[in-house]
Image (cartoon, rainbow, N blue to C red; front, side, top):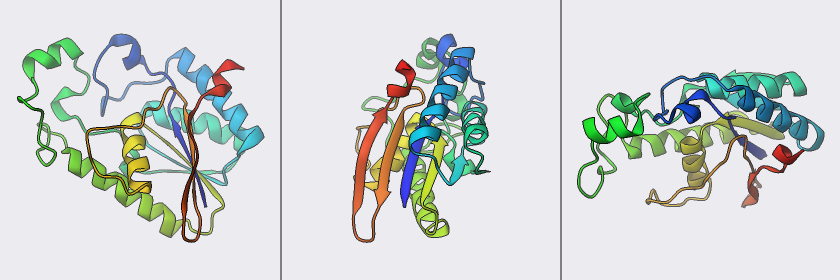
Length: 199
C-alpha cells in the first residue's frame, strides 16, 4: 500500500498571523490555486484510489479539489484534524504569548493545553489513524491523506516508529509525501514534494 500524504493549501489564517490549529479558516484564493496545481500533478502522476481527509475547511476544500480531478471516493475523519490547541485557536501569536505563555521549559508532553489536547494525545491520534488505514484499507493500492502540518509530522513519526521528541517533519502548502508499506518493510519514497507549485 502507498500512502500519499498531502497538506492543505494556504489558509486565511496564514495571512492573519494567528494560531490556527482547530480554528476553522478557509483556503485563500492562492490556496485554491495551489490545491489545483497539486491535484493536476497527482492526477497525472500518482492518482489515489481513495482519499481520506480532515473535515476542517482548509483540508476538506483541498481534498475536494483533488477528488474532482481524480473522481475517486472521499471519506472524512476527525482523527485527521490538526492539533487541538484549545484556547489558543484563532488567537494572534502576540496575544497568545501574553494571555497563555508557555511554562518555563515548555509544556510537559502529557499535559494538555486548556480546552485542548496534550502532545501525547495528539501523537496517539496519528498512531491510531496509521494503524486504522493499514488495517481497514489494506486492499487499496494507494490512499491519499489530506491533512495538516502537525498531524502529518506525527503521522510520519508513527510510520517510522520514531519517538515523540521535540522535532518535526516540515510540510509546505500542498506539500506531498509518499510512503509505502510493503509486507515487511516501510519505505519513504519522498518527503514534502512541491514541484507542482512551479508549474
